Length: 232
Length: 384
Image 1: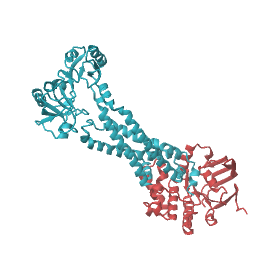
Image 2 (image 1 turned 90 degrees about the vertical axis):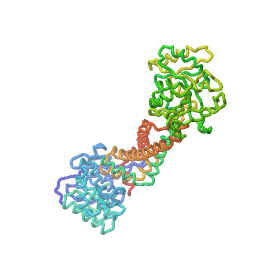
Image 3 (image 1 turned 180 degrees about the vertical axis):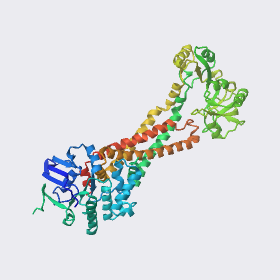
Image 4 (image 1 turned 120 degrees about the vertical axis):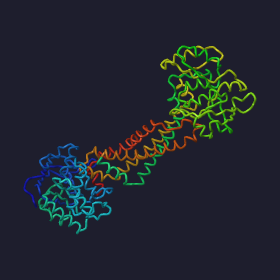
């Protein structure tokens, strides 16, 4: 871990309530969490415990019903939709369980997508894309379409897309959940390397204890509450 | 521009569906081009009508003749610069289906009032000096393969010769017309016609009067009608444009009929294209959610989806317009007899191009708004 103690993510007294019909469902209740800059945090918990919801709140994909979500000193929960979109483009890299690559674009153009939101010229964008694909070890498959890539390779492209803008924080939602053990290990090693060598702050949701062991810290979410140890 | 490749890549997602949608839009615009040319042929003369010309006809109907003696009385009316008369000859060449517009007239006055008829001074001279001389428009000459110097035999079911012989004319020239002017006409000398016809001597079909001040056509037309009020052949004088419009509307309100047909076609295409776009958005909800997660704002996602819709409509529509314009051009010679001004005006092409974008916008705006409003977390759940 390359954490330096500076708090990057601060969650204070956050509630998240979903309304299903006439019923309110409390997914997160008075939740508090701090994540240091450069930390690799694993977030574990049973299905329906609110892991992905918490990740969505940190990534600005959803809004808390109450409480403070502060990332890098900015109040994400108070931003307008428009500002939030721009903030995500600058600060957040997402890695999804099912890769979520656009099937009509080849690897390099998938990776280029977030850069379309910047002012970089085409040549500069290509340079960044090449670098990102190099980091994930896919420099030789730049023209390959997702359907021709293995699951592990697709996830590498997904990681390249997440890091190409050099975001402040990487949010990974079960990044190995759809992979076999070998491919999953490779992806975890890659995430570890990004955390160790490049100082990336990573928050990873996972079901898999094996995956969580690669993180520098693990927290457990159950019934909307966070625990430092796995609850019985 | 940097998003263009994303838009175009999305179009290729379901190639067959995109192509079929483009084709359906294209066919609508082929129909638009064709009907535009038909409308031009039927009512285009109105736009070409001289603003300083008045048509004077029998008050009851254009098929009623009026005396040629009116000519001098009209000429004396204040504001009248010059005039010429025409009659409807209804000439037929060899076979009843070979019908084309043909008119006896005064050559000198005709060429003076209609500078749209383009002939050389030599042809003009030949027509003035040849009693049986006639000039014919390029479309009709091409249709029958006529050459200058050829003797043209014509029959007229309205105006038989007194000696029951076939009318014969010496073709002294072929005229071209300024843009849009009818080149299917056949003009010959009235003096030859009037002397040889079996009946109706001293009468003509209608006058075309050129006035010295185009802003006074209404007053001069009224003065002409007052001149012949309560006579045996009362007149109806009106600006040439109004005359052509009422003539064209004998087959109905062309503009309204064509607008009705096109509206039905475009409404159907709108539903087809709109449904295609909506289906496209539904199928890739998760992908749109990913774009938004990456930082694409609501407006940008809306713009990308709308651009896809407008691209489909633009490509399909422009192909349809080009194909339609090609078809119209190719069919024009064959249509010359019935629809001499059968061509697609440039203005229709411009309006068509704007229509393609409008169609794409209307078809795509609702699905695009739906895409723009997607909640990211919900959209991403669709991929799980």
